[in-house]
Image 1 (tube, rainbow, N blue to C red):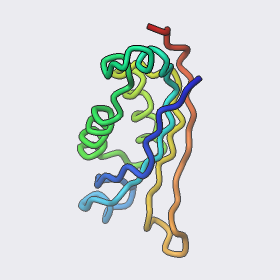
Image 2: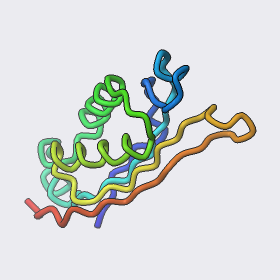
Image 3: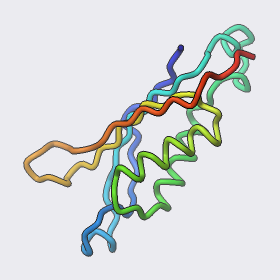
Image 4: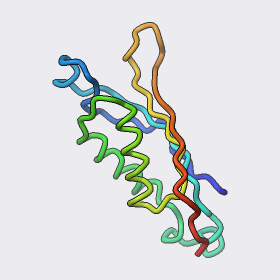
Length: 122
């Protein structure tokens, strides 16, 4: 399976379980690997057959920016679900970082892989 990659997508969101976190936004960073059959788009040189990573990125920025989850685990799960449901992506490897959550660490985060099945070649 081919991959479409989005690395280092930064977004500000309300995230966290502590009272002080509920009133501020914090930076989150996403690395996403998306299973996608690139052959149809390449064969026809046609964006409508490709996974439009700009449109997907803009949708994620809007979704995450408006979200207010307590746990990054929940946000990762809901983000993967959105990618599958709205963009018909059959598999998603999503790493969600929360820089600054642990002062002694450069970043902390979670990584999930969700396989929803194969996309059919067009």
